[in-house]
Amino acid sequence: MLHGIARVSCRGHTIYLTATPDDYLLEEVRQGRMKCLTLYSRPHGQPLPEPRIRVWPLPVLLVMLVRWLIRCRKHPRMVFVPTVRMACILHGLFSRIIPCEVCTGESTDRDEIIQRFRTKKNGIIFSTTVLERGVTVERADICVFRADHDVFDGSALIQMAGRAGRSFSFPHGDVLFLCTERSRICEQCLQRIQEANNHAVSLVR
Image 1: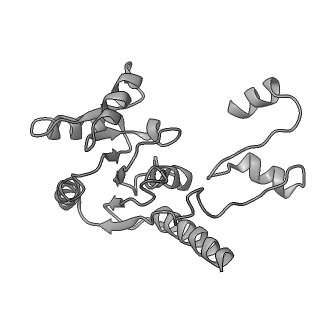
Image 2 (image 1 turned 135 degrees about the horizontal axis):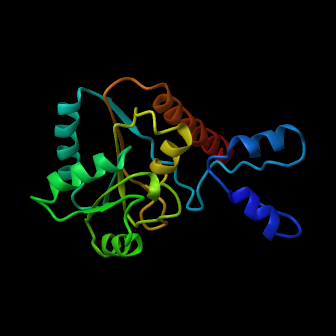
């Protein structure tokens, strides 16, 4: 849909800026109809936060989530989950003991929710992939709960991890992937981020 809107609305040269080019863009590059320039570092020059992957049964993951929320309590914390139901369940559990927000595709007041979250120095928000792109929160730490779920592809995981360390004043951040089983997509996500960081270092040298 976005490609169609761009083709109809834009005139002259078009530049796509994305950390996760889709199959259409990659095919255009392969066919020589589009040129690709790869930037391996962010504007502040610091490496991309590399996700830590933890694999445990679901009850253990819940304990690890609690520990992570406590350990990162000085920063805003974004917890991404694969489904609306899971976002609501976790929000229902945690909201009994600590103020937190929930944002999904079914939220009718999404802008107000995000604004409330941004105004807090150490807020918590449970979200589906609706916040994986286009949202920057200063100093945010990121957890993807059930990162091994089928709803998450490699692009989504990279985008969610990319919510951390975006600002010049705080270019670092913690990224945690919690999984119930080993995931090839999670491993590939980590590998792609590590490769980008290695390229950035080699270019500086």
